Image (cartoon, rainbow, N blue to C red; front, top):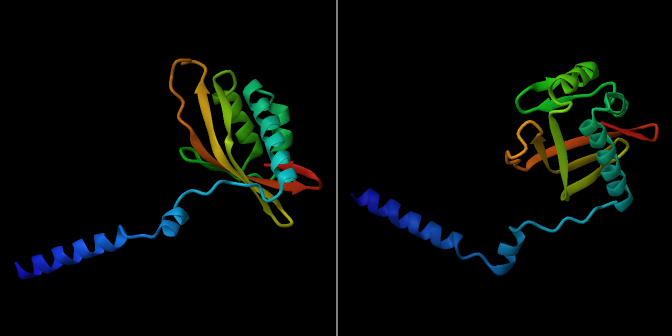
Length: 155
């Protein structure tokens, strides 16, 4: 019983200290507004995102293949890792074309340069099942690594 009282007292004191953060500490814990490090790169990545997903949404498989790097690593939460560009294109043709549309939530996009490589793009997007037009689409977070290959960005 004495140990229970000591433990309870310790928990109350701990909770009290946790709730006594200063205003500056509370502000530090809030999400900060994103500002691009390189506005030109940010705009270039947004343009490439649009180019790729316009091709994705219209089933332009050739355009998608042109944007994919030959040494692509595609990670999907359900499908796992794919490293074959042709397998990704075949899967898109089979599972996506005419069935799924992607929209970008532009206000969520963040782009960070990767020195001597390219950039990482982080944001939220939604996928819509064209077979179920009334189905709700929930925003999903994504991360894309863009590689600058001789002046051309590739996924």
